[in-house]
Amino acid sequence: MADDRAKLLAKFIEPLRVKPGSKVKLARDFDPGYKASFLSKKDGAAVVGAGVDVLAEYQARLAAQDTWGVLVCLQALDAGGKDGTIRHVMSGVNPQGVHVSSFKVPSAEELDHDYLWRYSQRLPGRGEIAIFNRSHYEEVLVVRVHPELLDRQRLPAPARGKGVWARRYREINDWERFLADNGFKVVKLFLNLSKEEQRIRFLRRLDLPDKNWKFSAADARERKYWDDYQTAFSEMLSNTSTEWAPWYVIPADHKWFARACVSAVLAYTLMEIDPHYPKVDAAKRKDLAETKALLEAEAPKGAAPDPFEAGLAAEAGQQEDGPESKQARKQRERMAKIRAKAAKA
Ligand code: AMP
Ligand code: MG
Image 1 (spheres, helix red, strand yellow):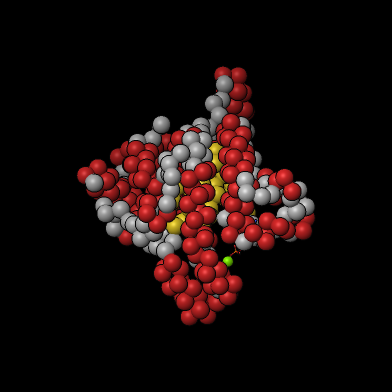
Image 2 (cartoon, rainbow, N blue to C red):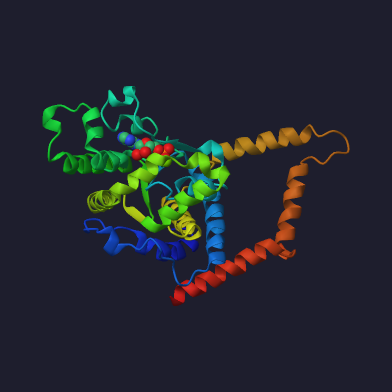
């Protein structure tokens, strides 16, 4: 991997990854309240900041290379923080290269097709990042917890019955493998919230008038099925974390920590792809040089033949011996501290 920052990220996100083939019991294996001991809230913001920079840089290269695509699947229970995470983590990237799709209760047209149909229409193109706010995993989560939703899908009799969930896991794994083999990286993030933190966040939505719109009484009623969801999530993680598309379980009770983790996973994923700007070949370079000479010859009397080149040279000189900006220095020092603390931990 080209970047030194990748090592810090790898260490940071390793404990969040679900080992393919391992049997997960959420309550036993993952603490929603976890935050790395070496990281303060302020450090967390710095990690998000660094992640945002990395994402912006690598997303531009991903788009230019136009070879790989990235699909990010975000799953969580209500109030898990999906919307806020997307807003913060993707704040630095060019909106032209990213699209977000939210999946709600399926429409009549969607129910008329196979269960992956609507998701496949929203996949990223090459050079793009697609974010699924809820994803095809709802098909083994809400649909599993509420079997009447499966009835609405009007499957033929042999496709229903006891084996349906094991089959869906296999089909989803196969689908993701197909995508991975064809240049589309699938990143799966589960924001793991505790029942008590969800209660507090619902109350916040009730207490703050500006947040009322986000509250739905149906969401609160869904708390009755908490244990069923925990089981469905555990089964999903046990059966669909694969070498080609692993799950990350993000501790979500502390929003700042969840955002730092998501930012780190996405930055790491892009670094792993390591996209490059297309190289310009000799013929093209010659072409560029000839065009440059022609444009320079057109300079009006008294004007610099290439004012942009003059500016570039001045900038390079400043960077070599000029002082670093205060903000850049602070960011660099903070990241160095986090690196040192992480190395000790
Ligand atoms: P929200 O994302 O909070 O706006 O709510 C979307 C709602 O759509 C949630 O209650 C989901 O459980 C529901 N939903 C999402 N996907 C499906 C699906 N495949 N089948 C049934 N309900 C779904
Ligand atoms: Mg909702």
